[in-house]
Image (tube, rainbow, N blue to C red; front, side, top):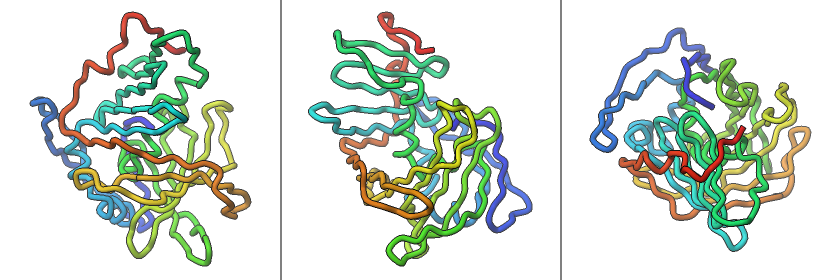
Length: 261
């Protein structure tokens, strides 16, 4: 999910998209943010979550996830998408060019660093990351859960976007509140091939962070043949901070770290 030119195909068959530029200041440095006309349903969802004006005015987003006895903190620069994940034993960062890993002690990092460095940010920053460049929208069949239907929006990316441009997403939202409720997604990072099997996350509840409605709890559900099953994993988010300021130096590669290939 990286930034390139947007191709808009809206559910309402918008014939054209307008493009303008809004300036924001981050650390007293003016930055330009492209603002474009979005499909009506996407615009309604974003508005229900606080709106793009507030989101675009932020410089960074940080959140914590408890993993056993350890707290994992993620900080992301919202314009450049540089990132830093810090745990008790490691630092994992992206400086805008390279993914780097720093060991704090002798504990070996066991994850897939280049796959993971921005993974939870994108799940957490939904639905706002769906206003990124390089996205195509189209209507998807509704998801029915316990007798209630959630309208669906299929999201795909232009060729060459990020590590996995063939990843696909389906956002399902509550037609009354317009808030996002479910997210189906495919993973193509490892196979590098188009996937047909979707995983499913429920956005259980939301927390107000400086005017933005951001997730408080995510649940991964068993999901097969369009049927939603039991919860198989749950993640709660704490220490969430959305800031207009950003310390760009925190994303720089430390001297005693290695570039992840």
